[in-house]
Length: 112
Image (cartoon, rainbow, N blue to C red; front, side, top):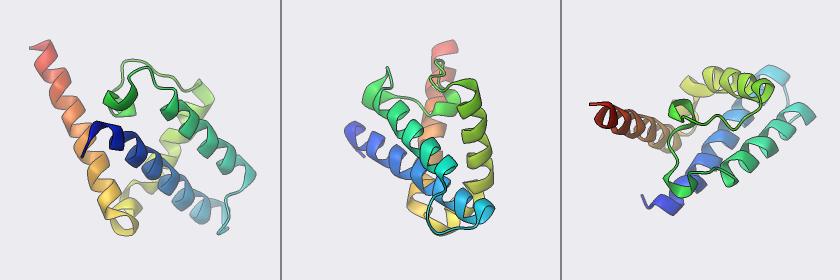
């Protein structure tokens, strides 16, 4: 995967997670206003990330660009949707897990 493609996959992943969450928790095939706003905010944050295409997984990032309320909402969405992602979007889920592992390995090398 090319670095420039990683932002594309990260956006697709967060959108898929929000869709899974909203459909299950809020009960609709179309995103509710709350989830639509969260999706727009998350995509905007990815687009404006200081690290650009080389950004680490958000969970491992030293800079938290989400406001605290949105950060808590995204965590809740990710926790809820994580397992479902393996079934509904396995490629995106695996790419996300690999990116997180890669980020962890980089931080271990930097601290050693």
